[in-house]
Image (cartoon, rainbow, N blue to C red; front, side):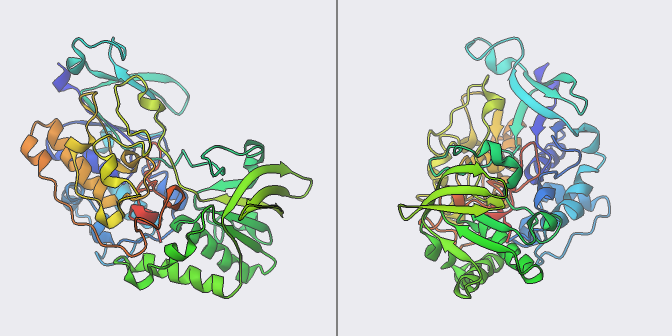
Length: 448
């Protein structure tokens, strides 16, 4: 019977593993697919970044209950973890728990989700037909697994926004990929050799970009020949940096203050509004043809860091009946609740399974991917999402609808501050998953 099948969870980041813990708590069997070789693989890409939010906001309650039974010691609730600490101190032990570990597949890349034996057009018996998940293992072998329901917590980390202000790659971008990094590279740590003494262009106006800028400035102290240009695609830096001490997440407010001090000291060149039109590979540089305030400019650099946010990859569920808002690319009921033109991280109302539902019964998108292109995701929001989703799968409809969530007020993540490029490592975040849920950086939880 379909009810005897496991519930598939795509992604073993914070939200995916929280979903697994919620399933175990209700005596349901998870079947978890993680595209990386270990849990939280995506979060480890930004392991050097410190989250905005303290530990108390970053541990799911069902996961805490599982771990406490093993003698796990919870970190200091008031301490701000790095991405690496989130992975090592919390997600690694959770993934290794005997109730979860046997059901977790690593190096498992989900390529498609459908209904067994029927295509997208067929109506009859759809809700009673198991899901079929197509996936490949580390050796590239193809597999199919059946599930009673699917929770896609795969995040957006592997779908970064391209350089173009129109949402499209610019000419020459694909050819210059060896000199381009997307997200938050560890420029003053593991990737130091690639950036020390180089001419660096940082593109982006959000918290991820500020993280990168401050890291480059730290590198510059040790490698004084390092040069940096910070390019904002929109001229909103005053609003972005203006939250400061008004932010209820102090580390995020401190980030804006530090960036403002760097600008005032003249340690970097700031260009805004900045629109790249073309990249050209020269013998000793990447030539960036762009406009600044509508005037053409040409800049030669060695490295480009693109911190302009993320977008969801919808290819996984092209054979399912999924309804997404055409602009936000979030579930239809959720989209108006999280539209960054109307809401900040702290003003998103509580929501759960009912707001995340699709015409395809039993399929749900959770975590940063559920927010589509909106940059307002917080990790604790993802935890409440999967608590509600799993309650719905278990048939506990009352618990599924009793959604309670109190979010910290913010001073910098405001309705007129952030746009698509202001996403943190989350687009999120929150996570290391089939595609990261950086569910935890930037607005997502979030990285400082």
